[in-house]
Length: 107
Image (cartoon, rainbow, N blue to C red; front, side, top):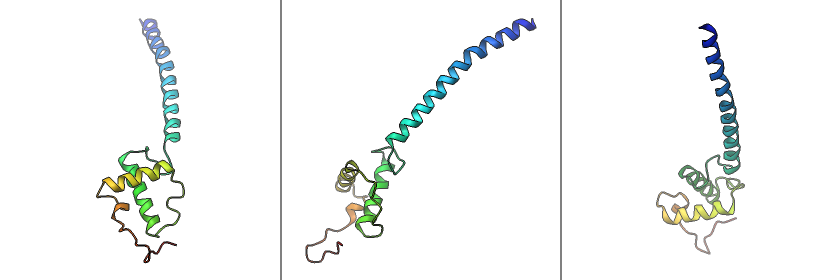
C-alpha cells in the first residue's frame, strides 16, 4: 500500500512540475511584455491612470512648474492628452486659459 501511495504522489509531482515551469515562463513573458508596453509613467497606455498622469505632467510643463515634466512623452502621448483636454472638463491642461499674443509669458 505504501508503494502505491508513493507511486501515485510521484506521478502527480511529475505531472505538476512541467505545468509550473511553463506557467512561470508565461509569467516572465507577460512581465517582459508589460515592461515594453508601459512608458515612463509605468501605467498601461491609454488607461485612465495613464491619461491622468500625463495630463498632470503636461499641466506642470505648461504652467512652468516643471520644465522637464514631459521630457519622455511621445507624440502619441501629446495627441492623447490634447484630445483628453478637449473632451474632458476634469483635465488640468484644459483648465489653463489660452494666452493672447501680447500678454504671453511663454519663455
